[in-house]
Image (cartoon, rainbow, N blue to C red):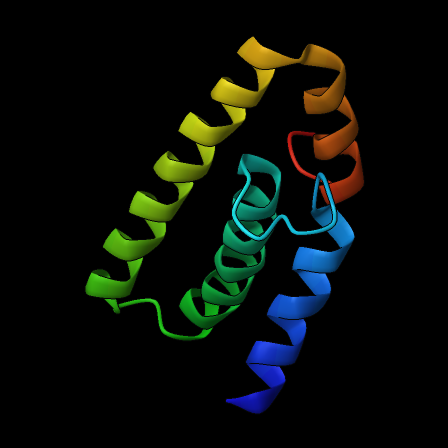
Length: 89
């Protein structure tokens, strides 16, 4: 549990827009991407875990909505974020 909180703090400090930022769209996308990657590896081992698969699909949808919001607000920030996270490609 402590390791997860430490990793979350690392993500927040890496992707924050300003110094006191803990919940901007960029940070949320980074945290969701970390959770999606973790759940994807779990589902590769446990192919019949359908409830976790549903949760994964919900997280992917939430991340997609946040990314479209970022793209509408600032396309350059969007491109930098997806390049930094290594998604969409």
